[in-house]
Image (cartoon, rainbow, N blue to C red; front, side, top):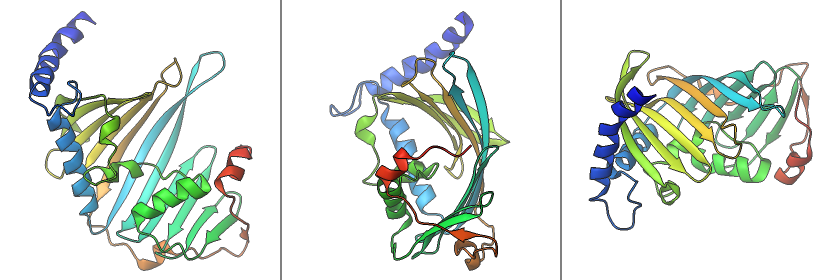
Length: 256
């Protein structure tokens, strides 16, 4: 531990020196270069004409005994901004698919064979993410990354931001950054060439056991995506159900 602290001292000193010249509206612990890296990442993400994204993630769940259990999940995105989206979210316990073609949003459970659709959404992907959360309690994983560099970026909530150093993720040269805001710490590894996020770690302070969420992100910006990928076609054995508003969603038991 002592060696680790000694290794980090130059980085901490550098961050403090850079923060000293920051505008008075920022916390002394917030490195403007780290914020600039976030905004550059967000701009790079929103500039993509189309892309696929695959993510392997692990989430720590804390039992009443205090023991941590790690749950793995896989996430796949197919996206054509500004209004077409397909998301596949799968773990050992649940499997959900979300389709959006610019007008109709459909949420489908391949295991249960149920689906729910909402017509007339008429929203950009950024607007869709907000609507899904506020109206239906559906949280699109990683959607917050796209907010940086825009007016919706939560800059004012950051209490600490620092550049940790250079490294690599799956053979890609990256820069590592660490951030802190109320009740959560998070880290990003951002590609040096394309400025796309390659790894993310989020640690929640809501629980004293500090459970973590970790994801590695693999991008393909040249993949050919067919238009049919964004429109749900019900299988013969699928049944349509209604979709609950957010207050009702909160009252429902979770799928086992």
